[in-house]
Image (cartoon, helix red, strand yellow):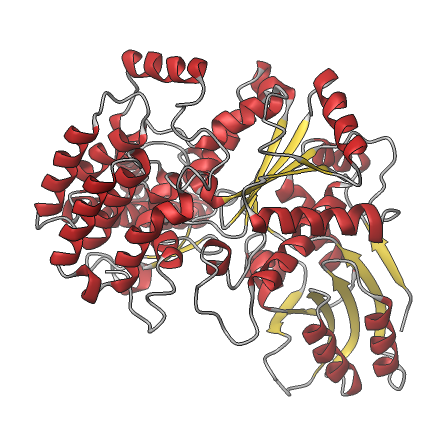
Amino acid sequence: MQPRSVAAMPDRLADKERSEALAQMHLIKILRAYMLHMVGEVPGYKALLVDKDTMRICSTQFGRTELAEHNVVHIERLDSNDSKEHLELKAICFVRPTRENVTLLKRELRQPRYQSYHLYFTNLVSQMHLQDLAEADAAKEQVQQVQEFYGDFVALDVHHFMVPVPTNEVLINPKAALPLGASEFEAVDRLVQGLSALFLALRRRPVIRYQRSSDAAKRLAEGLHSLTYKQQPGVFDFGSRSSPVVLLLDRCDDPVTPLLMQWTYQAMIHELVGIRDNTAVLTSAKVPEQYREVVVDPASDEFYRSHLFANYGEVGLSVKELVDKFSSQSAAHKQVSSLDDMRRFILEHSDFSRAQANVTKHVNVVTQLSEAVAQRSLMDVSTLEQDLSNPAAPLTAATAYEDVLSMLRNTAISNKDRVRLVMLFALRFESESQRIAGLLDFLGQAGLRNSSPGLFAAAQGILQYGGSDRRSGDLYGGGNILLKAKNVFKGLQGVDNVYTQHQPLLSETLRLLAANDLNAAAYPYMAGSQDEALNWQAAYRQRPPTAAIVFIVGGSTYEEAKAAAEWNSRGPGGSPQSGMRVLLGGSSVLNSDAFLKALGAAAAAAGNELR
């Protein structure tokens, strides 16, 4: 077996592109550079061997067509137990350096099915694993190279990433029923691995801050600090490059955002349909079966990219314009009356077919969204949701209680939407215990306790999960006079859209972090000593951070991704606001279904679905 080499960034990237990608912390460019290097440096026809995690990592960056352009003609899961030989192909193995994967690779190397093997690991590989692989390869000597390519995370967008945790529910609800052997500690270990790979890919060792009120965030901070500053300090030392801040938050710091109905295009698709690895599956009876699985990838779909953060009304108008434009192109294509017309049609046909597929996709998506909005009376529900979540709304507990009770009595409102309203009321008016109990009693009498125990448990437990004593941030602006005044002023000014008044807590957290005003007691530094923590605090007081990685244990949302994207473009000339570039990550990307399922997981362990 050839000795391993470490690639912080493949040489295939030109120096200028490499420095730009690192300076901008451009996650898409960084991951694609790794993968292009993998498939580009091995000549001839190739197979790509992946595990369940790297399959997701790859699929968000490359389609099969693009891989085929690099002579990747076969893709296989390492754990598929396929015994078919492919001796005409060279195997590119892109896998995580786990014990399970090393065992599978050893089996593969003892009975090789490919012409040769090129091993690329997404993270640091232990000497023990390397020795095991060398022994397995000793007889055949098929391994040509072993490299570490630090891509142990899913890049969802330029600034948004995810470290996928199969048992993410336990990071929200430690009582959730889990597969045998899984635990919250195991989930946190996976986050340490993913974030440390991100640090290596960015060639930066961040200063670590965390939410003191969260045990999971503290354990994650301790794990990262131990690995990057104690166990492997040399690997993570990148010299004079400035250190960003990584801020580790818990989802409980802002339980409101994942409960809200979303009205911008990307977030709305995830809320009402669900997005996984840039794919959504439509269920509307109006959408033909062959068009139900759609790719929603901003990198390959210009319309989607330009409307990610557009609101529902704007998207509807833009889709109509797209249809009108296509109709005019279609009419032109029908006018084929000469040899020149035929030649023009053939040359333009592929572009025309792509345009037709794109128009069909977005019409179908908007069709399903509009159906859900009408069937669930979501405009009425969302108006009340926004009032409950907006600190500037002139809302009293008595008025809000009657408004929520009226909505609960409406038979057109789904149980899930009823529960979300009760939870939002409880969070906003936490001290109104009698009124909260009254709303829960109404849900119980309506049969939710028996028909949807998971939903009912989520409503019952929301304050235990995300009440004021669990939160470090000022969710409703009550503790900050200036912030409260700003919210009221915003309320007096009005907003462009009543359904998008809400701003996630992340927006205010970023402002405080960039100004070095984020409470150091509530969000302390993880350091080797108190003196070291004070030194970091003093250094950032003199010169605030120019880069920040905000990671939410339990999962981020697309509304927060929108807030991070807007932060990165609000400065002069489209530069980051306050000169601090932001990356946002999480252990999943939540919608209200996933959040409610996690909160009610213990009660719904018998398999009850959200209804």
